[in-house]
Length: 113
Image (cartoon, rainbow, N blue to C red):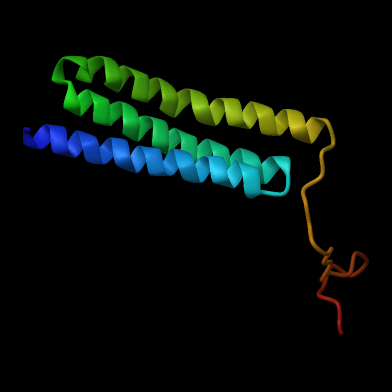
């Protein structure tokens, strides 16, 4: 095996780890906004790493994989933003364990305890 194949396999492995952690984040997060964040960031990095790894393993696919990586880098954040905006317009509230309001609405200063 050549050095590029080893580097490509490392990229594929790292991408698989990112994708697994993204799936775990989607499963574990409490609301739609946190799930979008976990899924988008991890799947973007995971898919880009896997595709670049394949491009390094098979050099004749490198240019095609580079185009796909650029498309993913543009499309994933845009689609996540559209989903978050739709969730916001649908009035989905973020999960909060307890509501904290440390500021007085009348005086716009921190409340005294």
